[in-house]
Amino acid sequence: MTNLRVGIIGLGRVGRGIIRANYDPAVGEKFNLCALSDVMTEDQVTYLLANDSTYGKPPFSLDYENNCIVMGGKKVSYVRGDRRRNILGHESFSELQKLELDVIIDSTGTAKINDLRGLIKKNIAKKVVCTANISGIDISIVHGVNQDKYDPLRHHVIAASTCTGNAMTPVAYILSKHIGIDYARIITIHPALSDQRVLDGYHPTSQLGRTCAASIIPISTNVANSTHLVLPELEGRLDSISYRVPTAIVSAMDVTATLSRDTTLAECTELLERYAQNELKGIVHCEYDSWGHEKASIDYLGTEYSVIVLMKHLLVSNKRQLGISMMHDNERAYCCRVLDVLGSIQSAWG
Image 1 (spheres, rainbow, N blue to C red):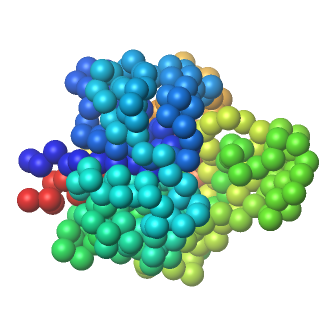
Image 2 (cartoon, one colour):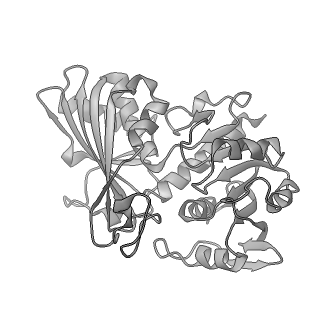
């Protein structure tokens, strides 16, 4: 099997999380990471990789030298460039071109579809994986649900959906396939993100300019769109809202759904458990607490499941009203799913 030559553009929380997730302490690298690119200097990147306030130190050594980040003794080319300005015309991209990459992961959060297609057109990479569902992508993949739809001849700019999309879609898939969903309201309780302000100040989205540690902040979210992008039969049947809260990690989701036929708590429980143990093993996890005690969100730090269903709070009323509560590590789990998308690309590479 071809060992893909992979680069990452954008080394914020997601980009650095993908690097960490790509390293298995027992076996080393999962994919051949050959290039990193960001606006930061290489010493800043190395510092942030080595010292993470959420996850601690990584399971590999770090240093930098001569335009390289040295991870676990392996030198990975580092190309400094600002994707926010004159993206494809920046001189840094000629350096990336020399590295003959198969796949670039764009985790900048700022790229548009023409930017990503330009990476392919300029022979910087053959495929691009984007860590957001931007308009114009060829396919959005939620691993465990639709990775078998990936067609290497047609799909060149691939989205790995979003953290909340990867959490909601597997559960929606189970319910839609076996019972049907007439309508669902999705509420996410999401940790503060880097686009918010530490102190009150200007922000294009005014409420995100308020001190992030002082308030619960309502904001729109694309989790409904991310879900029906993969499950088109649910288009028009979902809506969503997010509340940003002053925590560091682990997102919660609370969903109230009107189902398409009568069901029971026993049937819904059996469905979730069956998929968690078989088809969606490692993706969906049914949580039954610890020694009879419920966990707090921080207890799910570092978990790699796309979604953890809190079974104690699963509820069916009037035969068609479903209440379901879920949690997921919105960074670690998502970064693992990005790597799973790389696995699908590698398997189909030929």
